[in-house]
Length: 111
Length: 110
Image 1 (cartoon, rainbow over the protein chains, first blue to last red):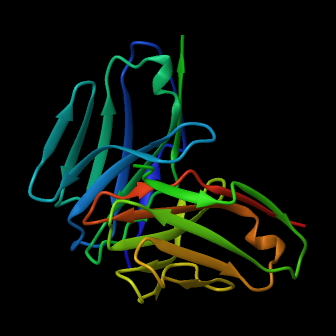
Image 2 (image 1 turned 180 degrees about the vertical axis):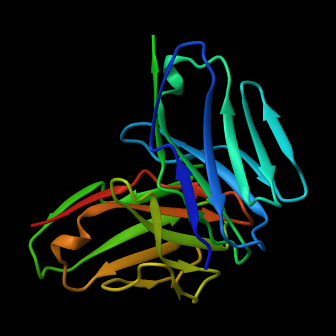
């Protein structure tokens, strides 16, 4: 089955700097890759997603890149703000509408 | 439009007790899921359903049962709770790919 690894497990950045979180997946049939943000005590919420027929997708300060050959995808957050502090999860889906999640990255933005 | 709701929000059980967690969605979604979230382990799929009357096992199904008698509801049961089932439980639903999560249930088994 699918296996998703996520790095780093914790990331501290200064406000205004960029943050990058990386994930690798094992199933070459995976074709959908969402990123979820979870604030403390809250539910995970989708912030951006990408499908396997696209290499990059942007939405304001966040972007996701996908390298199908290497089977890895990354989340990029530019101009980080304190409200970006949260846990971020990557996931992969190889069909059947099931997601396999990475272990999560705790992002701390220091002001 | 309430989205995905879960009851209860918190629960403390003693080892061996049973309970049922309820997930409800008002978005007419076909697919529903139960996950557990433990520190450092992300979200792990327990059971899921691809439609009313159907259920299937996920990654960590042992010790749990589910039922989907109505399209809008997905129930997760613990027949004999164990301390290893202490976790935060999230329900999610989707009509295709984007999964929408409920607010979670924090369960402690003593």
